[in-house]
Length: 303
Image (tube, rainbow, N blue to C red):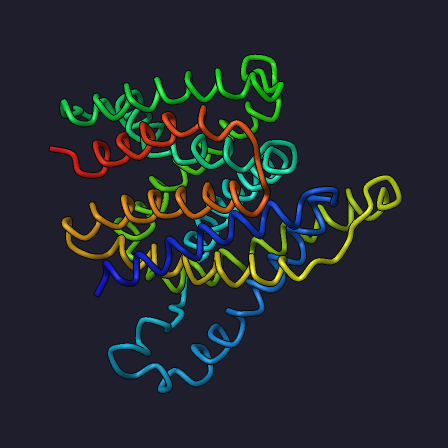
């Protein structure tokens, strides 16, 4: 069952990447994020209110998973920290997506598991298996090959600020993954509760940026409404709930979920980049793509 749900989540995230590319090209990023987070937040407000005033609605195995638990002030602050982390990541990621081909963004984005493993090794001195080291090496080599491919399109990784933003986003998302595990296991907060308050705080933080930074300069950074913003909000919210719920399962499932999510998401966005966006130099990107997929297998199915 979880394999099926993970596949659904992965396809949603793949199309989320596609809609993200469509909505940010020649468009202001802050209002795109503002309206997207507004829609995501509105999706959870009814669950927060019903959990507070009509908790009996959430009786039963399925409905209980949607119950939004009461939190302490400390736990609210912890979720705000996660929100700030992801929001910074999104600002970097959306800026990079606006200026880079999705066939470059996709493979670089999916280096996140390798970055997570490296962070665990450097910060927590966690011992890595030979399979994990193999995955890290494959990820590094694939990044080097992607750099060579990017030069064919005038994208020089060493001097391109958008590539650095993309890497910064990947590092922040990797840190967020460790943070999620802490919230779920150490703080024992349910996936639905984390997602509900995260989306609400996400909107509130974006509202500050929207009114204080973008609105006064809206003539310099014009915004065009696109219906892909709605699709983005719905797809990423549903996918995140499935992902967070998966983290609560036994180890075997937790190992498979990241592999499915990252791999299928990468393939979906890459294929659409070829046929939908008509991006170029695809042959030179195939080998790095396959190496990223191989690295995912090594990192997720660690020995």
